[in-house]
Length: 296
Image 1 (cartoon, helix red, strand yellow):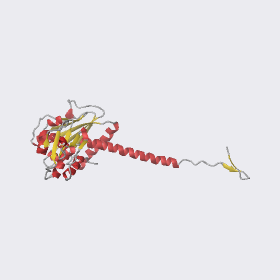
Image 2 (cartoon, rainbow, N blue to C red):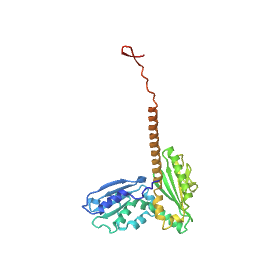
Image 3 (cartoon, rainbow, N blue to C red):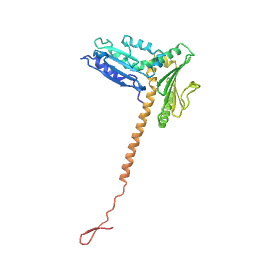
């Protein structure tokens, strides 16, 4: 399976080009990302020596409740600036004062969406580490009709994704993927426990307003201290915050592969049928004088 990158390569490529020197030029680029996220790279007030990167997330208010602003200040420091109109967060680089460790800052800029998401995970990882229980469950409406729930217990952190399958076939393929995750835990005891429920929410969400329906699925990750420790938490966040996109990406890839195989097999069948078509026998006859006639 292909792992989706948690960083935005377009942002990194543009900043790499800008930081490489040369004459500054105008830039005005809008980039669409997963979960309805939009980036905007521009020159504020037309200043070519300044590059502003802005991001808008429909669910940013949900993230703010769990310390997103504080985490971004920690990560971006003085490069954080007043948000561009219509956007939630903006960072600003001065091409006349390029940071010494520019590769690190290029990477950080590419992780802007990931770092917005990270606040809710770091908060509940810390609750689990400190043994704080009874905290209110985090509810992040990361898409219009899909939600993420995060809750900490004394010995684990539970992350639940609700997702909508647009097609009945997606449910079948999704179940196959979830089964593979369960089998993966047998092969590696360090993997988190993964549970999948269809139509009905898991027990953790009973008596809540969690969606119910034939096209609704719930994926539950049970993260243990080995996944949320200081050494592993960054990698855990990188992988889990993009899981919904990872799942649906592979469902679409699987359907595309199945369709291509069906087309290929149909083409082979048509070739066989064409070769099996009987030849028309000639009924042409000749007279003793050499003239030809066709028997009716």
